[in-house]
Length: 306
Image (cartoon, rainbow, N blue to C red; front, side, top):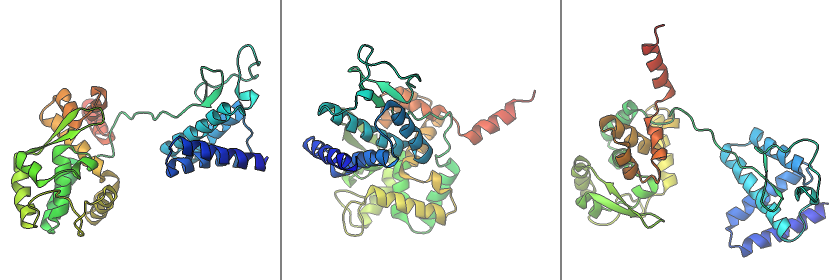
């Protein structure tokens, strides 16, 4: 059994390499398969359901789906080479259904009659709790400026005042500040314009010029290279702890959320906000209309008197 598994995994790796999968992806997929068999499971519908339940109990949402996706790719590979077990190739005419009905929320039947594990859908919350508050945002800006950490002051200022993703933040050049905007080209060939408020440019341009940045990218590390997204995230966590702000609310994307919530508070045009944020669907933007759980409770405490 172990030898058969090792041979099938070796073949699976070669199959993935021929498809041009990255080394990281190949490792993820094969780890999922190895984990399945390490639990002493044999390939069957019931065991796929049990494996999915095991993942849900022991791993976070993203990891669960990664393991499910890897296992499904392995099953597709076995089917392609003609080694998928007959118990996973059910059809109305060839094989009788198992005594217990198949849970369609766990395992789904494909068009060709075989079964695959169903991915997990994350339930959307009706509130936003991991967004930095306006009070903490203002406090963080003030403390950074008072402590002379102007570089990091501008990092969160640009994130919070433009709604930029951290990857977009790293594309900003001082020439863009002089124009007042940066045009970003999406994979679909669309253009999204990232605007820089006049007050922000008036404060940022002289500071970066004084630091010797007269052209090119503005967010560089001490070696003159672009700072990494990971580097930004770690440094922001450091300042959150230093200034006694909840670290769970301090991460690059949190300031993009803060921009959206502040925009709707000042100018309630969700369609325009969707364009500014680069959302393909306005439904994605609607999350910013929700309140945090604390805001919801405060509202109910105020209005419910019966």
